[in-house]
Image (tube, rainbow, N blue to C red; front, side):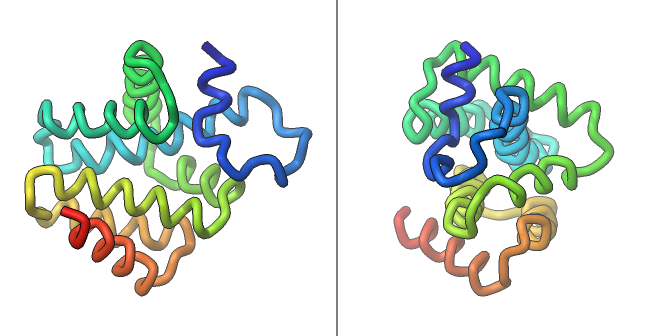
Length: 152
């Protein structure tokens, strides 16, 4: 299972330092999934449709089985419960992903936001905060949002 989780989000990591240990790779996967889970539950309504979207993303984009996707979501939820804020997750993403990869993560977050066809005030707040955490510009955030909205 660790090998599958290690390969999770491994796209583009070939150029990165070869000294990254498996725990760090796993932590990066959990951190990214934690952001997916947090945006889905920020409005205190973590719907079945949002859960299915996250699982679909994990299975389609990152080639995880249902069992591994479920395990990753459970671990991300546990980490979110134990965390004080989202900085620890954003730090790992900033240290390990290019701007293009971070934009892809933001696009995925927008996709989760718009599962129900609208963005509420809590999702709006969190997306604005997340724009700052991975050090992306306002234009990058809006471009990602428009890309998702135009693909609907």
